[in-house]
Image 1: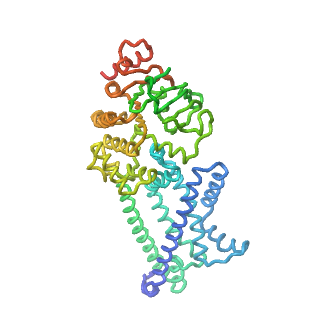
Image 2: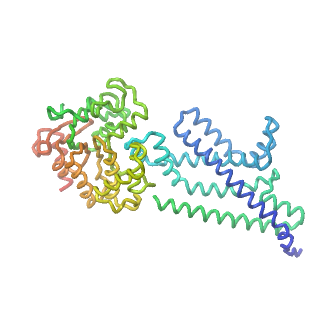
Image 3: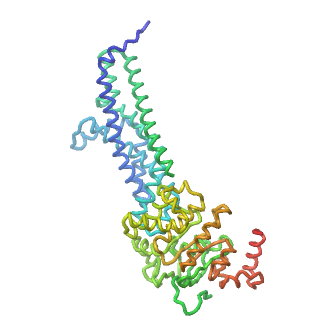
Length: 221
Length: 264
């Protein structure tokens, strides 16, 4: 045996990994931003709607949560354009998928957060004469946000890792970059060691930053 | 039973209000009139409907029949007699005319003491931030918390939080202030500072309806005491009359006896 580690080839192609990492982060940030909008709108709608709307929203959530992400990626990228007349690039298609995916998880996060806002606070909002909208914006959402922040951080970290699935439709993110280097240099151990370290370090930096944000908000409780 | 002093127009007029939660009748044809400047204390055993009555006055709870008017205007429904609920917008406007202070303070945790008071002033009263801040500081001064304007609720003691709660309610300039067991969640040594604030508001002529277990305070500060039992008004009158140990109202006598036994 005697496999000798040799990282030289990895460093020579490191731009592929670095560019891939940046694209991974970009995909994650855009998707979670859209996912937050989807999640918030549907969660607020859910808690104030009747049974029909609730059932539809619950069906969306259940569907997404019970289908593997990789399948959703295939469905949106290959499946959808064959039935309806749309065309989009692989990164766009992936952002659409990951947004719908994160949206479904965040509906649940936000819905439970909204329901966890103490009734007394809503009563206090009513008592000073706030309208339902004003209560939502000024009382319910701020408290909900602080309740859900830890779950939001966790979702964000796992979405960042989920961007690796984009490699299956040739989006040149981090994992795809690793595969490219592997195919062209056959340094499989080295490249995946380096990529693992990159995911780990980036994940930790994100987590650290998000925990700082959480602490700021927790202090304000 | 009429509980109003004669010849004064009632600011708050509760007529025959009944309400049930499922099969439990919590209010049974309650009538109560409160004149401007009066301080009315509602006492009674737990489960007697005191808090529910208070929550009906600003329509935090709806009721099944009867009428509640403030300054002649029906509170929750479009017209007396009809059961057509007001729009949320109207309800919000009506509620802004009453202030409420809660047992568990219910401050907005993400806002400072001043911010809690300013929210209603800016959003409901349409004041500018600067105006609202001035009003907030004035009322924080009144409750002895001028130095805590920028503190968050979590940084305040229970007594301080409750004083902010009172400031938040009165800063809106309500016609009537509803106080719902506002000292029940406080450590005994913090009760005094809160009651002191209520006393000073009473001296200013603020109309108040107060649910409380503080009998000494009820005796000293209120114009009238209402004794509720089983969802109805069982006795009403001036403090000396209601709190007399030899009242011939059986339920009241039992309540007071039990109360004395547990507090002394």
